[in-house]
Image (cartoon, rainbow, N blue to C red; front, side, top):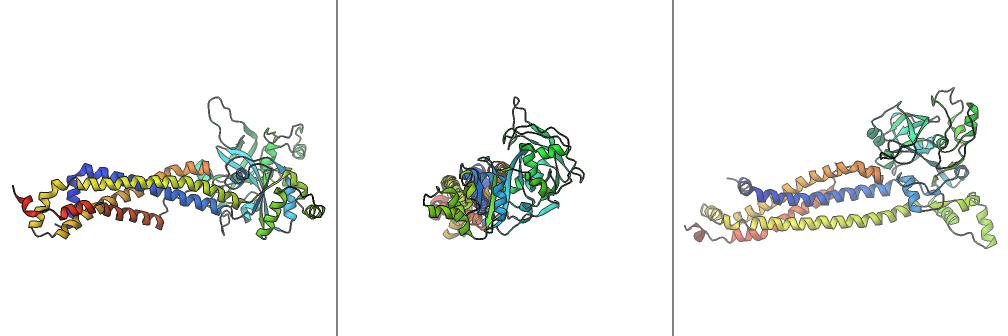
Length: 462
């Protein structure tokens, strides 16, 4: 009988003990690998999705809130700023690209973002990677929209689907809560994006005019179509104008750019500079107090953004992401330590499970020795058993880790803006599991030495 058959026979004879030990190893491996996967995906998401923008201009408030709101589509806006800021950015020679940002409520829990078509065509959701259309085209008229890949999959809709916005950036629930649907504003899906593996996969993009028209009253648009224009402007009290959103040339006689000229307010402007020093310089001008020195003041007044200094806050996303990663890293480190503690407990379980069976195996080992098995063969058999228990537990743990991450990934994407790939196996996971197997073999050394010292004559006697 070969050594592997002997090992599996011994494991089968003590099935309950073996299963429990394998289970404890699997639990530890699943916990450690799950944390590793989430840590890797979190770092990838929170360090790569911001590279397309050097600076975010928004209303004064929390810098972290602005970063989460604009890049990861979490949180809410700190307030509104004038659309003139965006126009100034388009004229500024220091700025390579500028993209407007206006949150426009939600559709079945999926956030709707107002921006420019240039954001879809030219921006980079990840380093060196632009948006790609999986099907259809980008929006080129009011109330046309493009869906992120994950949003389209979650909602189960495609090209041509028509829908209405619901008030708020997230879906409301509860028997006593009646969601406010903007049923006078119908949007149509014209395109679906390819997966970018960023938070942008989880939202719907449309023009800033589409989101602005819902939040504010467009007098010119009302007058064109014979509607009353007597409504108040309020960012959170969404006024509505009536239209059938047929999206025909007759319905929208002007270009999208002409309609976007009517937008007066935005939530933020995302900027990409020709050089990083210019971004830092502008951030300092906007965030630091106005100097009293007349010479310095005159120099600052030449900056095209100086007139908006009191209503703007400049956010450098890289700084906020670094701060966010330090917070997330601490939590992940705690979970990693817990996983290794669980594995150490599992190692003691392997040691105890095999060691406690040594008394029962003494006669079997003596018989094997009498049939010609050497002490080193007995030693290898015990170590091989420990290795198999650990290896089987690690493989089951890897499967459990993938299943766990796959189950929680939709929730993580919705609440944290992180797109997690649960089935991507990387070298770090094999290193961890390989370490587990080596430590499992080490746990079998003590019972193996006991088997090695088993006396043949005394254990063969009646």
